[in-house]
Amino acid sequence: MTTEGITRRHTLTGAAVLGVGVPFLAACGGGDDSSAVDGGAATKSGAELGPTSDVPVGGGKIYGDQKIVVTQPTAGDFKAFSAVCTHQSCLVTQVANDTIDCACHGSKFSADDGSVVTGPATSALAEVAITVDGDTITTG
Ligand code: FES
Image (cartoon, rainbow, N blue to C red; front, side):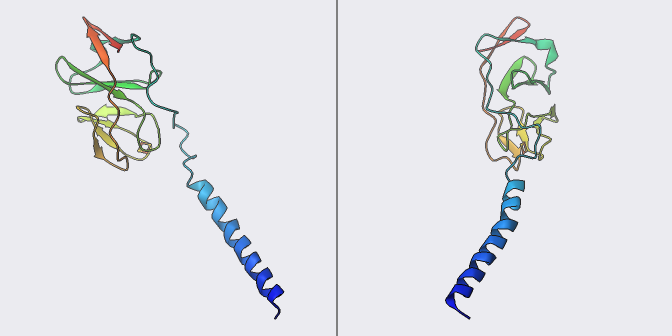
């Protein structure tokens, strides 16, 4: 066998590995989550979210358009976080049992401080500033 043959075989082997590897990498690229959203909360300060009555005590409400989730861990204590999951940027889907949940891969975040309760997410939801004026919740 000539060195040309070895070189050619190695080249073909490399191409075969690359041919197998590229689709695998494409499948792991995170493009399979159709509910993934871009960026974090993008609502400008002073935007009205809604009435406080929309946010149950011990629960919360997800404002999808604004990408903000507001919780009320205890009566009159409102908290707000980015509704964009820190794992792969899906919008969180519910607030239940003191957690903010992402259905994409099962991450759960504390409704009290946004910290990770259950992975795969490793970073807390970013806190968002809100103002409660009477019965109205606004950003900022
Ligand atoms: S995007 Fe993966 S758990 Fe939320």
